[in-house]
Image (cartoon, rainbow, N blue to C red; front, side):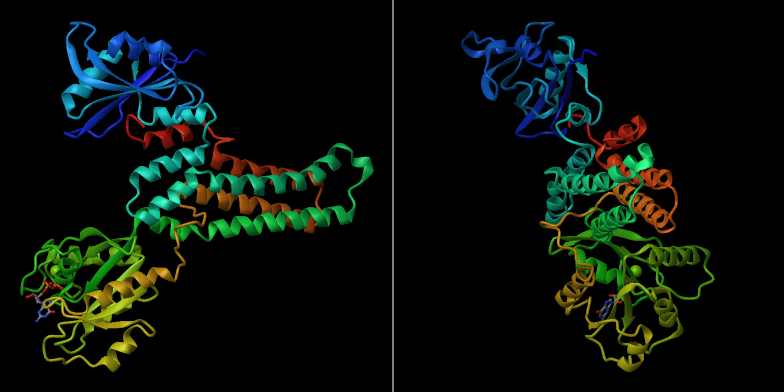
Length: 460
Ligand SMILES: Nc1nc2c(ncn2[C@@H]2O[C@H](COP(=O)(O)OP(=O)(O)O)[C@@H](O)[C@H]2O)c(=O)[nH]1
Ligand SMILES: [Mg+2]
């Protein structure tokens, strides 16, 4: 099938230093050549790969100059898409780049769909599916840790590891399959033992990858942290203090916060998504009741909970209810209002959530906030998020496929143990390989590929 040439604005809209129109396909360089009047009458077709050239973009309809531009020429196959690529640097701002793009379309290019450049890189075999997904993760990275996890994936670390595991499963499978084809030779019991051992060790490696998925989710989405407690404990004040801005409304009236307010912060490279919630208490006010229900839901879906108590008050049943809801979660207890005379009994607090760290702060006077941040960061350190060189499973799609691969290997091992026929064993082994193949896109259906690339922006 003859490929067409695609074009898009590759930079974010708005005013900026430069804006880039990107072209890819067999006509990319000739269209750029027609669009741009190069200095000294240079011809685009004759330009060497990976060179840049000065000129003027000219409107093909009116022959008027659109902008002063720089053309970068990159020739297949050593390009992002493995096709000929031309990039036109215009001055930033919407009009210049848009008119340059329109000119490219007039000259025969087609408007690119979201992610189509990267999709071509995948279809042309330069990167696999897991690497293409990493490109989105790089663009969307929230912190330097999430960035390095994504860059590792783009470098092919995950793909390489999966390939090795698949190879070891394949060589184990060869023996089993051979026995199906040549049953008269009989499969030695010893041979099956070797197969089982190889499958178990592949299974172990997959389990190791899966163990990083929790950390991966956090790197991608942030640690969901709910700040909960009775009304007026100072939850909204703490949120504002952590964000260093007046994000939530703070008043002396209990029940001020009705809806959940979510904001992101970055603690030593780790993204946290903080939720300020409605105070937990018995209430007959319909709006407040709905707010409190939302608080309960927020606790349930949270990765971590900050249980806030008012140090200037005695412990009450609302505090106990809030603590009960937080049980089993990664948690911190924060005793607020350390600037006031303390009435709260620490011994009773210790019994609320045994083993959970207790920190005294004053949200009003900004005391103890540093210590709280450190303790919060350490809550997830326990999960072993490193982010730098480790391979980390950040995608839910990958996680599910890995789980399915493990399941298939479990079945294969079970069949070997039970002395089932080789056909059964082989079927499960092939299943495991298919699941692994789906991660890198060796075996993938069209609509999965469509879904992955629809997450991209146009021009990438
Ligand atoms: N003295 C003192 N007052 C505080 C402190 N933190 C919050 N407050 C006050 O407590 C009241 C309730 O605070 P708010 O943040 O709205 O509590 P929330 O209902 O838990 O969100 C407000 O009047 C705050 O100014 C603190 O550390 N010390
Ligand atoms: Mg509040």
